[in-house]
Image (spheres, one colour):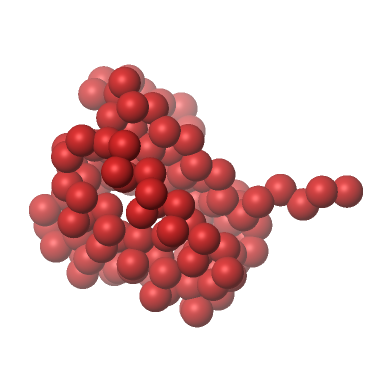
Length: 127
């Protein structure tokens, strides 16, 4: 049986949109790979792009994910991300994404947190 990756990324250049879905137990290995993936993907987008981050299937996040998560946030901010639409993990599985967002996005990026995929799709469709 093949284990699915802890993250899956798609890019919609026509809509200037990145979709990232995280699942399972996230470790530093997966988050480092995600940060590297983001670094190459953002080169295909223009400033003002939107990120949809789906964390609802995350079962746990190791604290050693933080440096790679913040690296990804810094890359996205530096490349000109305009908006984040996100579904956060259950509070017990979260390593402080809200707090990290405040520090690394520095109020310069619009953040919309929703509870369901349907809500996220409505927000994304309105862009």
